[in-house]
Amino acid sequence: MPQVRTRMAPSPTGEYHIGGMRTLLYNYAFARKNNGKFILRIEDTDRERHVEGAAERLVRVIKDYGLNWDEGPEVGGPFEPYIQSQRLDIYKKHALDLINKGHAYYCFCTEERLEKMREEQRKTGLPTTKYDRQCLNLEKDDVEKRLNNGEPHVIRLKVPENEEIIVKDLILGEIKFNSQDIDDQVLLKSDGFPTYHLAVVVDDRLMEISHVLRGLEWLPSTPKHILLYKYFGWELPVYGHLPLLKEVGENKKLSKRMGSVSAQGFLEDGYLPEALLNFLMFLGWNPGTEKEIYSIEEFIQDFSLEKVQISDMASFDRMKLKWYNSYYIRNLSEDDFYNRLTEWSEKYNYDFKVNDYIRKYTKEYFLKVLKLIHERLQVFSDIKELTSYFFKDPVVNKDMLLEKSKDREAAKDILNSYINLYSEIIESDWNKENLDKRSHEVLLLKGFKTKEAFMTLRIALTGMEATPPLFDVLGLMKKEIVLKRLEDALSLVS
Image 1 (tube, rainbow, N blue to C red):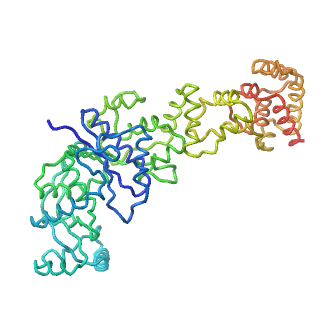
Image 2 (image 1 turned 180 degrees about the horizontal axis):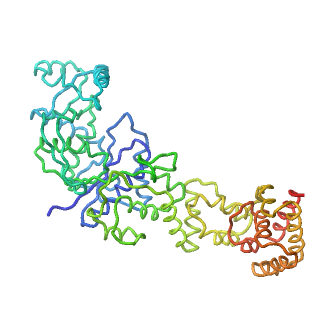
């Protein structure tokens, strides 16, 4: 049996989409599961949409997710180069080969003519436009004359008429297309760059790709690719088309208005690579068990295309992703948590002043703060909101303070009572256990309701309704800070 060889071929036209990372992960796992090779190829032939530096960012973000490749940029391999813009002579040779075989032809139509043709077709109500084949039957002498005169041209695929093209898909099963619905696709553009269709077929063949696993959006292109394989006289790879990703409750692709859609964006938001990969594993694949936590090694072991769902779209549940991320954060050791958090804030320029806080307080204090919020943190970017009151005075909402304490007089009574209590407690007794005990004694003495009294204290000290346990917070803060904040709150309601 030939060696399994899969590939991912992203285009550097912007930030790498999170859906592309899911597809890459499946290709990676399938190759590893079958003792094969995984190849990374950069498809940078769309010069109009090419973004400078995007290829380098593609390579970096894949590595940041903890994945690698056996052949490709920075690694090399037997089929170099793995960047398409460095392979133009190869594509031109194959395009000319198709012309010589009668399966492609030169087209000299201007963009103005093509746009006018499309507009006229749209007016007739056609769902899609197709080239009208004006250049299909040009005389050979006319073609040579135009070429010699340097007239701009492209090379188009000559699609057969009324031919059934069958796609045998590993995931979707057998799918039939009719060639009447297929355009005479441009293969080589006037600038000498190939279109995706020519380049992907030539490269997949020359790089000996055995399995093409890609998103469902590429299914309509597959019959064109099958024709190219047929005309070149090559054996087909095995195709498998994966469901696209959609927002939960929607029937359309991921939307930036719902949050990040790029692989890089999720890392910048403070998601751990291992959590992201674990989440991506289930976007189209299911092991058929209750198991939800997978290392990459376990995923490779269990992955199979038979367990990929037959569906147009898989739901991208952002709340589930947060659940995964919080699980992985909770399971970091205290040292790893500190190191990963600080590395993340430095790498992505997140304004969480770790060194400033440590200088102003102590590293011991900083670590105690992190320990308190460790299990509450869902993504690293929440760290500022969850810890800010440990390092600077909060903005206290007067209405919220009064609401929790019932009314102005009750608020003043609660704050005064605890200012008096905490003023009496000496530094050596300033700890969580003693503060808890003495604070509850005041409840009994004054007849305060627990929720009203302690929520008033919580908001006065932190500005927030939800925090770690109140006396954990109190015990960690210095006595003078606690008293100052209670007095500030008292002034606010007086």
